[in-house]
Length: 314
Image (cartoon, rainbow, N blue to C red; front, side, top):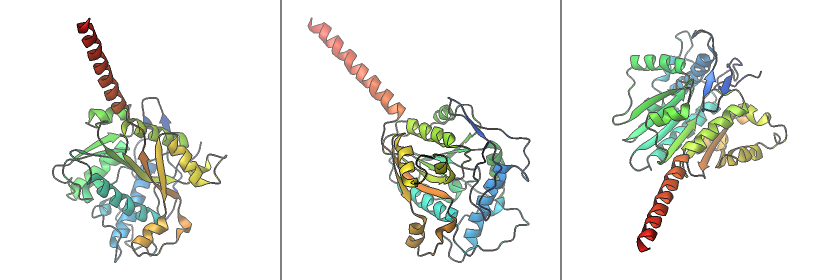
């Protein structure tokens, strides 16, 4: 059994994540003992990322401001400002901007799916346009604890927007999304950051689910741990080749994003030596299952109408 990478922190790895078990119903089950915030690996990983956002917010010229991250940070943690930019914070800024820019171009209802660690504050801290529906897929116990803390500091979803939580432990995540109102015939944008993964097979199942649900042209972005590429011995020497092959197998065209380039765009210095993630943006090239079914029904309808007209002529 291997160990999953957590969200980045001053200590890059907390090798304690429990396994995620795949089933055919798009279920990503997390096995765990009785919840204890002081020792639970998922809670610790999410807290570590929140701490990075909190410290970035305290910088003299921060990349972003997360006014709610502080409520997740233990009171005994010193409020020292990190001197060097952390790749997690660069990725957070990039994903923030890309999400807002893309969603703003959608007409009508805007669908956003976040695969997170349970402490993602994007639904509360970003200025979402009206009619944005946000689906958060994350560990239930972490999300519930975080929701209580956010409520305590007055965090609110923007008006005319909706947030739905889909527990990571749900028996059928795809069905739950659709039950909550996800429409496989409308554009969507997906983001992955901090989402707990144990194996390459776990991520492949996530990618397969998005490929089934997202219409052609939808975007999927986020961070992948580098160790996923290292599990494929045949092509691990060429990370770009591995990423291209993995995403294309599920119908996505992918681009790897350079952390140094993001830092340069914001006039920041960045030492890339401690990057342990792959930042990416992928575009869906296939049609969603819903689109294919809608077209099949329309084709069947036209075919039936043609048959009826033929009988009338006879």
